[in-house]
Image (cartoon, rainbow, N blue to C red; front, side, top):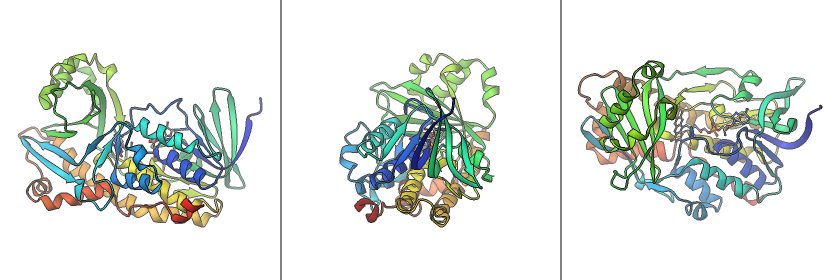
Length: 404
Ligand SMILES: Cc1cc2nc3c(=O)[nH]c(=O)nc-3n(C[C@H](O)[C@H](O)[C@H](O)COP(=O)(O)OP(=O)(O)OC[C@H]3O[C@@H](n4cnc5c(N)ncnc54)[C@H](O)[C@@H]3O)c2cc1C
């Protein structure tokens, strides 16, 4: 059967933070846009939960902030870490020159459902769930659309511009043959949930101990946990009794002594593979990649979602009028490449100099000099707060887009 054919001005592959924000902004500016998302809902647990001050500022510019903050969330004013026995604050967001001096921790599916509901008010916005992009349609070297698999059969979407926002395993960038520079990542993350009891501590926390890093995100009645391991170590861990893993968790967070027993085994633990990479060119005629599809981010600093949103804002500011010109695509990469390079550079440095060292440490853990300085000089905590909370070169939604 011939695939159903659809025509739009912009087709976005992937309904993550980058794709949904770009779809919302373009539809609001009057561009007919279709977002294709391969899953049937937004309930992905591999997503981060952090909505940073820069994203909250964008929500304010869009007039959505108050309503957005009515959704259940936790306000986190500072990020804390514990190195061995030393507990310290590494970033204090209260001093940022933004409306919200905090990170909002909110399950990402709530954020994406919110954006989807707001976008649905615009007749030019279309979101197709369970639509998996499988390939590109090309004519004379130009990308003119995508093919996608849906429960009702294959579709072919023709578009002036295709945007790859399909995350770190992007099929769009692979099919487009865009060259990728890999930076390597010495870590992976084991991702699981533990019941949170009323008497547990409240703080979202990173716990560093010899050979171990354990992140606990407070999601109200449960902890979303990230147990950082050296890359490739998971297979070896799986060969050991599960009890060994439970004991390692309890050693780092003694308050989980009871709830950890509810983890049934390795099937309750998901391996998240970390990678850091960047496309050399983020575009081709008729095609642009943004978010992790253009630059896969490490979880270090929890900034990937916000970079994805910033890319979407920068792209929408340029694209809402002419969608075809290649110079416009180049301009978007030029604007976003420097913040991405610098952020990835910092992530890679932290991975190599701090995280990888902690993971091979066997004796008592001594915090690195940079961390000791942060503990001693409160003013210095404004630097990581700025990098994590606002990012480098924060984007603002253009007045022309809002007025269009
Ligand atoms: C372990 C881990 C923890 C992290 N924690 C945080 C954190 O706390 N805070 C933070 O800011 N960042 C975090 N990050 C980084 C963050 O997850 C990413 O940078 C961010 O999600 C990128 O957003 P995106 O929209 O570009 O891509 P994604 O969020 O990956 O979204 C891509 C979307 O495309 C869809 N898709 C994929 N393929 C197709 C296809 N072929 N067709 C249609 N749809 C498709 C996917 O289902 C998905 O919905 C973490 C990363 C890792 C690995």
